[in-house]
Length: 470
Image 1 (cartoon, rainbow, N blue to C red):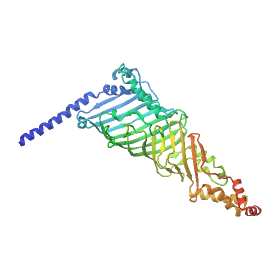
Image 2: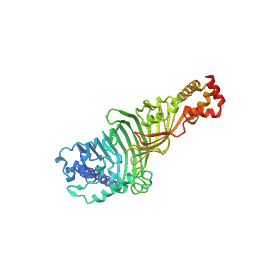
Image 3: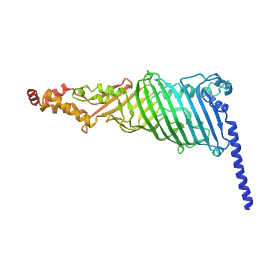
Image 4: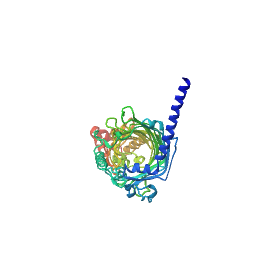
């Protein structure tokens, strides 16, 4: 009995080992440059080029290098073999990858689950442009192809209509919770998928805003997506991933040299890739974002416009230069942001210390990153040092104008509406084009003449005495 059991177990082990061998051989034979290129070009309206490819028989590992995704051409339409294609035409819209390595668990694949141990991407380089309607130049590459291997794609019309509907919905009001991006549904995934780790290294994303011609560059990107668990049949329990990514975000003007911002950012947190009710891509991704200490903003139109609306306070001694110069983040500032169809939304109040002063952006503030439209309710609280020096200067200046005995009441009338906890506190609203914002204080501001008149009504004898003293 023991010999029989041993032989049976041994036979099963042999079968399992042989299965791995045959599956490895099958995978290695099936995964070729042409098979990968044809697979992607049959689904998306693009051209794919691969420099080198190698696949392991036993390890379930595939390594690709010099990958380029670019606008589709006749070679992709006709399904031309990769060895017979000429060089792709250079394009400002592209996705390049220096090296990509993927390792899967072959045994899970046998049982209907795609389990990826690791996907490592080095040198990802994405470049595209966005217009003010939110359309980007990558969009056509994500459309279905009209021709596949020289023949009309039988699924083209159905997929094209679905894509166009998704684009139209994307432009509608983001606050409408019934709107979803139905360009991809989880049911299209062939099997449950698990990913232990996606590693991203030394990558860059370059974006040109067509309306303003400003350039956004996210460089030095590194990070990971780990513990991805998606089951199309059970999204309630299997629909999550852990995100961690960091890099440098810079914004430059149309001339390519004037820099508006230089921010060191880090995003992390748990995300849900799909809407558990509909199965479509989650339309409202929420994550934590940290702006690191030392990040700089060289030009912030909102700050400049805010300074110009506070003339009354400047005349009374408030030094506004602190928000008109380069703004430096004094300590790590952690935000919770939502992203829905190009629109960034503050999920909760966003505090940040800039040049020693406190800026708080209120919950539900939003910025459309495609057309720069925004609506922000916020407040700016000056540091204790600046507030105290302002009060001192105001009293000195007012004493010279209306007399020492009246300077205090006049200063109180001027600064009480904008003082909180002993500091100058300016609540304000900014709206419209982010580059040319409309900014107004959310409190009524008095100028010096109004404050003197108000003081005259309340205590005319003291004011008269003060003026006579002068």
